[in-house]
Image: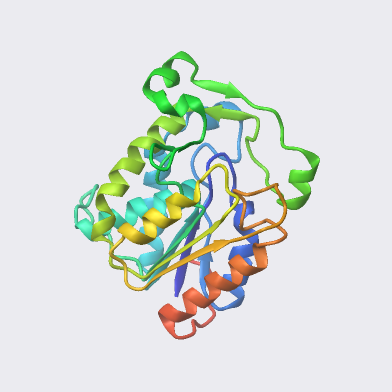
Length: 265
């Protein structure tokens, strides 16, 4: 079975390594492409856009799906992109004149469907309450670096001191589109998240599991003791083994035990 894993906003495929290695060891042909603008300069990242990330993810998924049944998954932004492509495939509304096949399964790790919500109330940041305004007034925010304790608990490399409100606004628009299409999804779904995630409230996982028409749907909300790294379940030292094991179990349920082969392009 093919497997496409998409990384998160501002990160790189390195953040997927613990998960990708376990899936590959289980016999899946795993691809972890670098999204446009990522892994390069800050200027290139800020200049990139959701439409570019989606187009690259779509091309990578089409390449994998051409080889055979594909487990489509992602972390954070990558999970949103995976759902976006799955909704397109389910709606049979090709964006570029080519029909996308439905994924064999969907793996959504710490995937945000809301940047803010009123009931229950949560927000990634108060500017998210008025993103159309703030993305114009203050398009780029400078953030403090992660603490040494956070880095030790959950390693991650990327643009951690930069926040693009323009990117967040584009994600919010994609989130609304994906939410409208969740009822179209039929592929088996596995949702994994930490209870302590402050960037992606657990309501996101509940909402996805409840609204998607996928059968079966697996929802895993995992506890950790550390107050750090709540949005990094794949690399978090308390959860990474569990996340990888759950993903492998899900993949095996789709294929009955995948065989080994080389990665897809």
